[in-house]
Amino acid sequence: MYVADSRGTTAPAVAPETQAVAPGSSPGRRAALAPTVLALGTVSLITDVSSEMVTAVLPLYLVAGLGLTPLGFGLLDGVYNGVSALVRLTGGHLGDRLGRHKALAGTGYALSALCKPLLLLAHTLPAIGAVLALDRTGKGLRTAPRDALISLAAAPEDRGRAFGVHRAMDTAGALIGPLLAFLILRGAADGYDAVFTVSACVAALGVLVLVLFVPGRRTEPAPDAAPVSLRASLGLLRRRDLRRTALCALLLGLCTVSDAFVFLLLQKATGIADRWFALLPLGTAGAFFLLAMPLGRLADRVGRRRVFLGGHLALLLAYGLLLTGAHHPALPYAVLLLHGAFYAATDGVLMAEAAGAVPEEHRGGGLALVQTGQALARFAASLGFGAAWTVWGARPALAVAAVLLAVAVAGCARLKPDGP
Image: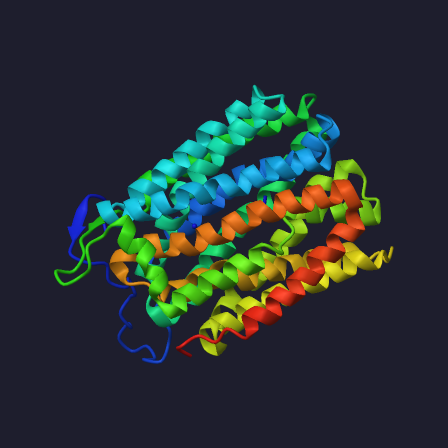
């Protein structure tokens, strides 16, 4: 679990949806963000309230409530992240092939919303794993088409800002979700069931907003564009810049400890009481929310790859603080700030970087390639870290992850893109 025109219109291609400069305004002033970006940001905000309510309590529910071992939790955590990787290519490719990115994104959002009530009925490892797999199938279907809509709506020089705004709105939901889960756990007799019920209602609202307010248009490739096919999408890896971006995302993902494990490690290091555990994601989300837009703009100016690698250095520093074993009162705040900075510098920035190396007619499939590699790597990382924790203990497992991350950052820094 690691922390987006009118409908039915047809257009020959998707042009950046930027507003013209108003009369009398400064020509150097940036254009307003496209309505598509803001509408998708609203959908993601609502959906993330629902998702993060569950994510905030799930580690404690599984480990403390159902008694799963770290290895068992690592398996479920891997399923949570890995299954979406298996269908992201499908979602991205179908969005490109059908020219219906909104429809594919809506299907994914609806599928995830249907899974929330099922958590009320799942109380065993296989049942919970099946529900999480179905939920992540929905996420896999929607992610690439949604990001394709954002990248196509934004001007190339503003993609970092567009993704930063979307991720900031998305993260506002991540701030509200854990807080709402915390309040429900404190006030409801059957706290976990109440969290899952409210989460389902909020998820349904997100789907409704997408249907009513996100512009939808059928896109057609230009007459001289390459045919849209799965083979052509996979062939995008022949593009040097996209291949190197995907390789960096994969290598760094293999060395990234998932959010749930970071929060469990932080609780173990500081002795935070179980009743406060659901609030830990708020620290990460708060830093992400505050830094997503500034770092997105910075990435547009100084280079998205530099900011992306800098985010992983922030994560490495967070690992180092956890390894010190210090009991300073500021430790939780410092770790969560660095953890949020990591996401602000990498999540949307990676998509903005990849979008520049992918033609419009293959935008969904190209972004899905990068997302798939990263998600599969994090699936493997969750399994590996859960096994290492079970066999060696928490601190040795984190030390190995930190060393591997440092090596991966150094290696990726040597892979220079063709462009600026």
